[in-house]
Image (cartoon, rainbow, N blue to C red; front, side, top):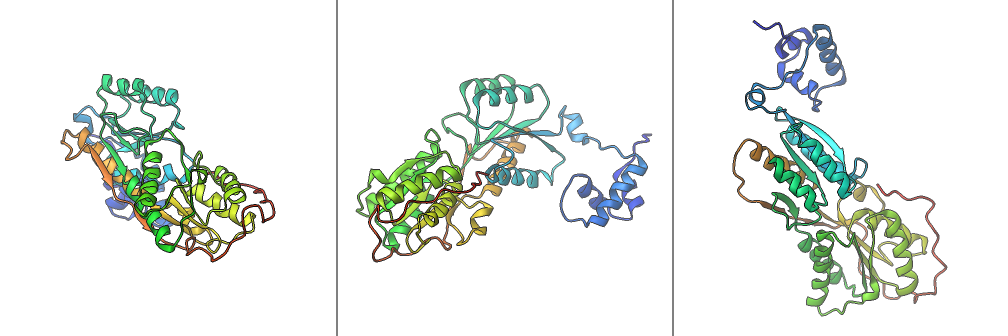
Length: 356
C-alpha cells in the first residue's frame, strides 16, 4: 500500500473539492486567492508530490508537451501559447516552453534537445522549418504540429488562417468607403503568410478596377518602429488616403506616424491592421483590423497534437481557420481634399515605440 499523499487527502485537509485542488495545483483559473492559499498550504503540510498519470506511465510517456514559440514577449506568440495552455488544462500534461526567435540554428537545437525523450510531442509556433529541423523530427519520429509556419510545403500537420481572404476583405472595405490611393506595408518578405496577405490586397484592387501604385507598397519587419518610419515616408512622398498593414504593430506605428505628420485618423488617413492583438482594441481610436483567432489556433493545434500522441488519425493535415474583419475607429471615407505631398510640416519622430 502506497504512502503517497493523494489529491483527495489535500482536498480534505483544505476543506475543498478534489477538482479545486487539481485546478489550483495545475495553475488553472477559477479559485479565489484565499482558496489557492489554503490548497497550497495544505499540500505543503501533507508533503504532496505530483504524480504522472497512470496512462502516461503505462505508455512510457513523459506527460510533457514541448512548445517552441518565436518569442516570449510579443502578444502574437503569447496569445497562441495561452490557447495551448487552456487546452492542456483539461489534460494531464504540462508545457515545456522554449523561444526560437525564428532563428533556424536555435530551432534545430531546441528540436534536437526535446527529441531526446523529454516530451511526448511538440507544437511549433511560426517556425522556420529548415530541412535540418524536419530531418531531426523525422529521425526521432516525434509527433509535431506547426501553427502559422513560415512555409507550408513541409509535410507536417499544421494550423493556418485564411491570410488571403482576410486582407482581400479588408481591402474591399476600404474600396467600398471610396479609397483608391491605398498604401500597403508588408510583413517579412519570406513568410508565406505575408505574400498571401499581399496577394489578397492586390487582387481586391485589380477586381475593383483600381490600378496598384507600386510606390505605395513597402516591406517591414512587423514592428511598430518600422510601421512609423515607413508610414512617415509614404505620407511625405505620396500621400495615400488609406493604409493597410500586414500586422497590427505595423498599423499602430502607422497611426502614430499620421498624427506626427499632422494628419487625423481616420479623417485624413484610414488604417487597417492584421492580427487583432489586445492592443488593437485598446488604442484610440480603436484599430480596424483582420482578426486571426490566435487563441483558438493554439487550442486547435494542441488537440491535433494530442490526437497524434494518442495514435488517433487526423481528419485533415492542414486546418485553415477563418479570419474576420473587425471594423473599429481607424477607417472612414476619404476626405474631399487633402494637401498635396510636401505641403505639410516634416513628420515628428516617435519618442518611443512598442515593438511588442
